Length: 235
Image 1 (cartoon, rainbow, N blue to C red):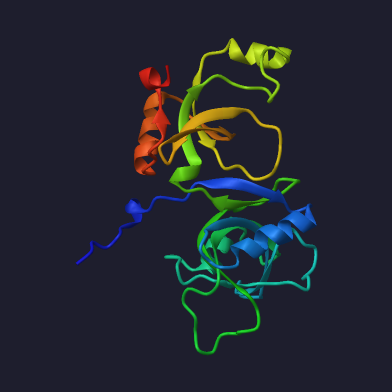
Image 2 (cartoon, rainbow, N blue to C red):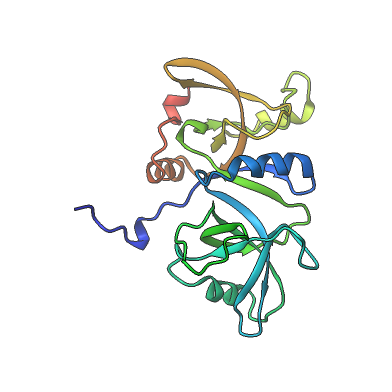
């Protein structure tokens, strides 16, 4: 019989950035790919609540009024009800713009539920979405992640063509978490990885900078990351 997972056993997903909410065409294509409910995503939602704090409706993005395209939020996967988590972030009943992670589709459908409104099943409630420009995010699996000890890179031009890159290279190397499947066709630096037994050079985006190599190794162990090159391994 499998052991029940305790709260301390939960390992949060690692997210990589997707398109901006301002890029309507790219956002629509990205969201269409996520509708199968197989990938955990992290999205900014505007949530409207009733007089008693109950969740009335929600919409992806930041909105001054309820738009045409809305979602019903399902909180069956949360230990603490969504209404309580939102009240903790913002006690009053004004609309709240908050980061929610989860999957599209209802994981715990009710016979009497509204079947016409699309459902987003919430698995985690994060902080309020306060940035001026907002992006959607999606989970990155082990094949898309790497931990490397590397110096800062200012841009894709490199130290031979960029003075700021040259200055960055003079600083000590840092342990970093890399997304080697970044969204978008942009000019980025590359890093060597091994996938399927073959050497590949992948463009990457830095997701996190660790305070030390020990912190990076502990993170990699917790998330079961296989591509880790630190210390002597990185030489």
